[in-house]
Image (cartoon, rainbow, N blue to C red; front, side, top):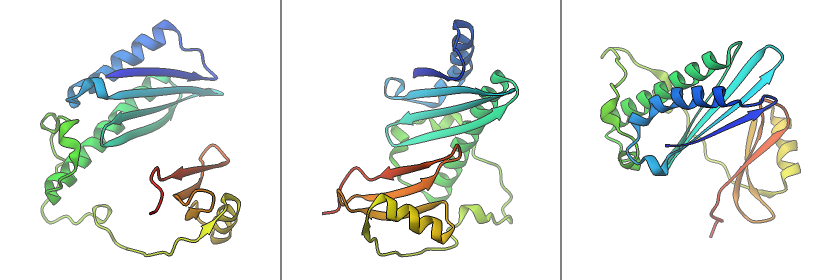
Length: 187
């Protein structure tokens, strides 16, 4: 796995870098194609709290965890635990649905145990409870933000008028707005 350790409002010393790499290396056993897997850890400090965002880019998807804690190293440990939980949940969902997601080429699922669940337990978070269809209107980013705010939502799906790409504008946790845009335009 390739590592990127980035500091925001904090200087990443050799000691911090080596400790974070050592902790992140615990995740190596879960990936089959190590040269195609990149792990980015962004560490930042706000007052007396440390924030760690770990993002793992694998060919079929991206895994991400964000944790705030008083201690930087504890935040890294908690973020890694969160990522492992996400991967276990993904494995359980794939086992249950016989999913054919192309993750088998990147993740060593045999190194995970599926989440343990009782047979009589029905989990609402694993079931789609509502489906909605929506006609995408072509509009500017400013109009999309205005409509999102008017609806009281924290995201809004629209068709970008400049390049005809499906786009989502959203409210960022740290303030401001973000845009996610499809790479392929509508034909």
